[in-house]
Image 1 (cartoon, one colour):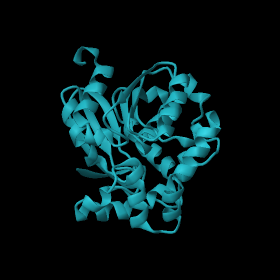
Image 2 (cartoon, one colour):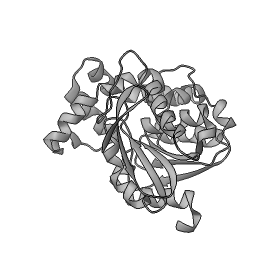
Image 3 (tube, helix red, strand yellow):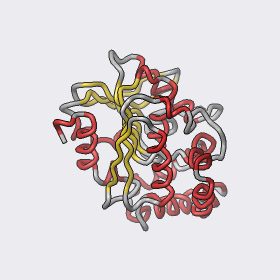
Image 4 (cartoon, helix red, strand yellow):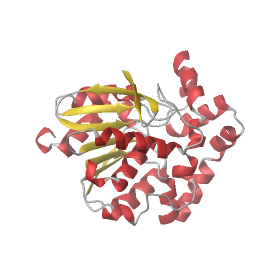
Length: 271
């Protein structure tokens, strides 16, 4: 892994593979190394750049600036230095960054592959009842997060989005990293969770003309399926895949399958 100054901030960044350019954006509480399994499965077809998102891995975070703003600024700076439009591949919060970059700079984006983009502000706009239920289901996690009860917040987060008891069985180094980074979820509340009209709307994603791949886990919370329903209806050129045997962490837990699905989407001869 390298550390580079991008858009004025120290940024952790990993390179791998050969072929068409691609940028990989990880989920909250992870870092660019989480893509190792996926990068191994795509290395013969894509020249990949995986970025540590703000406040994660080796990347600095400026608390005076919105976290998604920072993530998009960095991603667009990386895209601008590529010789051709790149494929964006994102997971969870990283997928929201990918979608926003596609909206703001479609000229730099060849395709977008998103696994469970947690853009709940779009759910608020398109399915208010489902949004209200998601906010209710997230109450226990939000309560611990707002009280700075980091371990309880981590346990509640993993119970919904990872695996029950997941925190307790993690290696200590992974536990400590999660406790360090979980406050960053507070920073993305304004970007993707609050009921507000932001830079990405169901209306402006209807203008995207690049191919999009929308993915989800069959064991994920119901709100994910309902949100992806909205996105599928709005995106003009979209394919959708469900990973029946996993949940929100599919790109990590099922990396070879995830890589095969993305290969099939981008290069049909590899399916």
